[in-house]
Structure formats: structure tokens, C-alpha cells
Amino acid sequence: MYRKLLLLLSLFLVFISCKDDKSDASVKQVKGDTEALSFYDEGLLPKDFEACKNAKCPKIRVNYLKFREEDREAAKVMNTQNEAQLVRIFNNTEEDTDAKNIKEAVDEFIQDFQNFKNDFPESEAGYEVEISQSVLSQTKKILVLETDFYLFTGGAHGYGATHYSNFDIPSGELLEKEDLFSDLEAFRNFAEKEFRKKYEISEAENINSQGFFFENDKFALPENIAVTKNRVILVYNRYEAASYAEGELKLSFPRNKVAQWLKY
Image (tube, rainbow, N blue to C red):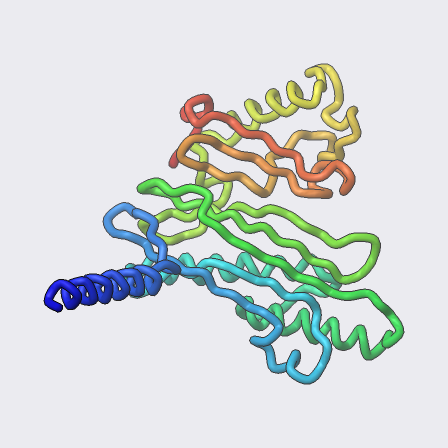
């Protein structure tokens, strides 16, 4: 009997331990400069919106990251700036959004869809928004978020893209291209040579000779740059430097090859 009691007690303790592990499974940590940054996934689905309870709604799959603001002041800054970046995704629709947060932006998206259905009840066209985020890289100084999104509001096809956000970990501030490099022009010159090499454009040829459409026939860095632990990644999304059919254009350099121009 005593052995049976010990066995039952052991099983009970294992059960409690497993339960505790599961309860913390959604909380992840990023090691910062002085203390850990904890973050979790925040999700939005049609059921989260009042407008979807008694009317047809578009497809909504929105998952993004939030940093626990009780951990450090920088987390609050990151959350504010990250959400502002997410709201800008909806500026790819016909009208720019005035939403103050991601839920307001999705709510406007729903209203646009329902107005469309009221005006064109016979139309089978649907709206769709899908957003997902992940931590691409983190060091003591910089955190890189990768956001993948897809928007469809009718027409031949929707618009999908990848977006990188580089954050200064101590302050939480969103970094611009100029903040990432000590000599941005030197890095741009290097990137142009690598771009020409990859797409077989000689130095004597116009940068747009192979069908690209850089403004004023001059090579430019993309909006999307990620400075990770091991690499620097450049991504030109659709329409940024080539046609939709070309898809995204990507260049990736080993960090040690461009370290001389990096601030982070």
C-alpha cells in the first residue's frame, strides 16, 4: 500500500509539473543588453469583431508579437512602433487607414468589405488579410522582426510582402537605414555591384536594362533591410524594383563581408 501511495504521489507531481510547463509555453524570451525581453503572440480572428457577429466577414488571420511592458521600458516603445508598422500594411488598400492600432485597422477593413457587399451583393469577390510575425534575429544590440502579410481586396490578385523591422534593444527605437550603417553610400555601392553580378548586368549597362525599374535609372537600396547575427539581407518586394510577376528580389551577404559599414 505504501508503494502504491508513493507511485500515485509521483504521478501527481509529474502531472503538475507538465501542467506548469504548458502554462508558460506561449511566453518566449529574447536576451537583451541587460535583461530578458519576454514576448507573446497576439491574435485576431473574425470572432473578435462585433461587426462579424451578424454579418458576413472577410477572411482574417492576424498574428503579431507583443513584448511584455513590465519587463522594461524599451518594450513599450517597441510595441508602439511595431503596431504602427502593422497598421501601415492596410495602406496597401484603396484608401489609407487612419486607424490608431491594429484592431482598428482590421475593423476598418471589415467595414470596407461589408460596404462592398452592400453595393455589389451579387459579387463573389472576397476580402482577405493574413499577417504573421516572428523574431528573425537578436543580439545584445539589435532585434529584427520579420512580418509576412497578404491582402486581397478583389481584382486579379492580392498583394503579399515581407517586411523587416530593426529595433535598438536598449532604447526600443525602430531603426532606419541610416541608423544601421556607418557609411550608407559605401554599402549601397557594394550592394549595387552584387546586384549587377547576380542579375548579369555589366557596369557599362543601365541598371534597368534587364527590365528592372529603379527610379531615374539609378540603383537604390530596398525598403527592407535586416541586420542579423550572421547576415545582412536585402529584399525588394513586388513592384519595388521589378514587375509583380518577378516576385521578390533578395540579396543576402555574410556579415563579415559587410561588417566594415555596420553600426550594429
